[in-house]
Every structure is written in structure tokens, then in C-alpha cells.
Length: 170
Image (cartoon, rainbow, N blue to C red):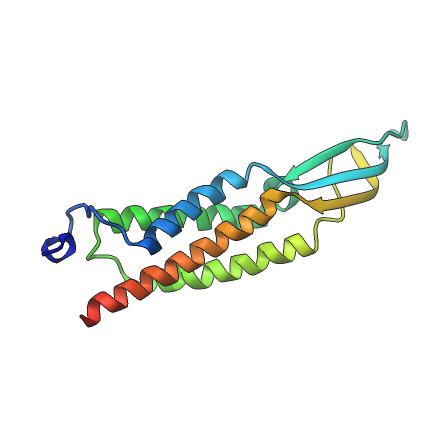
């Protein structure tokens, strides 16, 4: 008999499926990537609000600086992904399939949003008192890794759901 056959609701599971591991790992990676540079920018000139000076800085933007709304959506996605794995670990039999269906859809929609942000990076860089002119913004490797992490969450949810369907038909 396997661990899951003897398993009682409320007892921690000693075994997570590949889908749950992929979802949780991708969620952790995504949370870390939110704080790394997503976009690099180079400004041809900067006009400071008092009208003085021009210089050529190089800098980067995190997800929070580039698009706070998208960052909050991805933060929610990452936290829920990790929460699902913890819930599944603690109560494997009491885990509703609707959550995996929701995470699959939400994950793929979020992947589309991240892909759109990579294709259409921010056109303005807000530095508080400075206005940037002639800005060139390019995606950094972290934005592509975040896309992979979001897709990993969605695929992990699909695999988790698929495993649950198989276990109920046996």
C-alpha cells in the first residue's frame, strides 16, 4: 500500500506529485525574481525638474518599479502557488480541484501579461524629480525567467489536476 492509500485527512503527506513540486518551486522563484532587475534603461538625456543639467546614466527597473500592478498580480500568484503546495502537503485529500483549475487559468493569463510587458517595455522611467528624455528600455534576463516561472506555475497546476483526475478514476 502506498502512503496516499493509507492517508487520512489532516495528516501531512510525505509525498507531493511533480505538479505540486513544480508549482511550489516556480512560485518561490517568481517571488524572488520580483525584486531583481526586469528592465535595463539608458537615457540619452535627463531634464531635472529645476531645468539644470544633462547626463547619461544607466540603470535598471525591478518589476515593482516598471509596473506595480503587474508586480502585485505576480506576488499574489506566487503566494497562492506556495500556499497550494503547503495546503496539499498538510491536507492532500481535502484539496479542491477548483483551485488547480483557477491556478491554471490565472497562471496562463499572467504568463500572457508578462509576455506582453516584455514585448512592450515601459516607455517612461519615473525617477521622482527627474523627467527622462530619449529612453531606451530593454528586458533583462529576470523578466524572461519570471515568464518561465509563471508558465511553470500554470503547468504545475495542470499536472497536479491531471494527477488528481487519474487518482480518482483508479
